[in-house]
Image 1: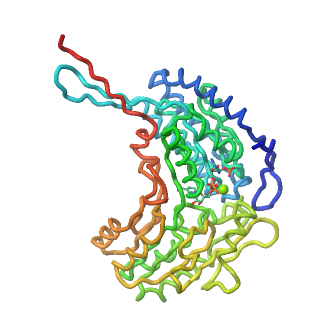
Image 2: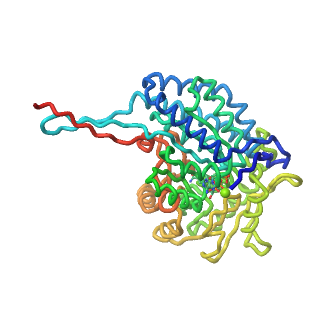
Image 3: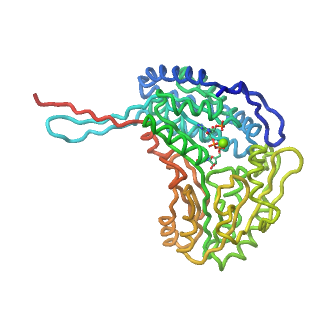
Length: 457
Ligand code: NAP
Ligand code: MG
């Protein structure tokens, strides 16, 4: 397949072209992988304290450019400026967190007969990180920061739609003193650059975030070389509201748990399950909360939601809201250019309705009643996904029982948080494979080597 030479990056809030980015072909991809392979020989030898210092310098560079990176993301992805600042700050924080790792990559000493047995955590080599368009900065950082800390080199392919912040992060790494070839950002097509990462024998691991469909193909491709793979895929997470909960707070926060980033969030709580006796009251409280979401020019400090990423994504999302859709109420969105879609609440009666079963990846939520705790757990567990979810109740025992009962990787009780850089993140079932972030992410970027040393002659 021949690669397109360039890609016009469009501002989703205005539909104007922001800039044009050169796209790599297979030959350029191979050159970058070869350079990363050579850089690995020296990067893995850098003294732990020096590698740590370089990662902290990289974090400082990101910190000094948070506003610039955030403005780039507003223009490229239509993220609200508030979110975009958080996202750039998250890259800094993830780098800082994993900068402590090089000096703490402990092995073990295991008691054995006739000698000493020690284990080492060895880096894998070149890591290929493939990033989607919905959170270009954080998802990149969750891959490259622990990978570099563990002594690997990284080649990173941003999504075609959103390459700008990744390209800038690659420049900031060099400015921070990270050696050439250690971290390289390579814009290009998934079917060309991404696929080459999967096929190239010198890329020893793929970190992929994106759709479940592409994730399955990547896993199958990696199997050819028994290549390591971490997958973060789709979701259809439940926000379970029991009648005993603080309903005001549950209703006031529910819109932000699904409409944040215009719903283009794998952790979006896009199914609100409400205990039947509280259903009417909850809906009464939810309506003003949804209508109050500020959907506007994402560069404004007051913006709470921006546009969808592209015309194609708009068409996909709109297909879930046909003319006869069971719309309970909707928020507002600007008119005119841009891929705007108003926050929309649906109340489908049929549990097989595709708005109930499929990931929408847009600002559309379904609200469905349930009868009791067992019913809630059963409904939350329906479908192929299991990424995140929320539980609202003031009964501690119930909160724990339901937390244990829901088959999902990341739950929050009486809140909607999914992601903290210091805690593990990832999916059950077809939402993914492996975990990112937290204290154990280094294990996903190293192999355990066992060495036995005889002490008896
Ligand atoms: P996607 O089509 O799966 O693309 C993700 C990345 O993979 C992009 O960089 C894409 O490149 C690349 N790619 C596409 N085909 C490829 C191939 N054959 N080989 C190698 N790489 C390939 O997903 P998306 O449309 O960007 O993102 C939306 C989806 O991602 C949603 O389903 C969402 O739930 C999921 N997601 C999950 C998480 C999570 O953490 N679990 C996070 C974010 C998104 P191109 O840009 O060239 O297509
Ligand atoms: Mg795609």
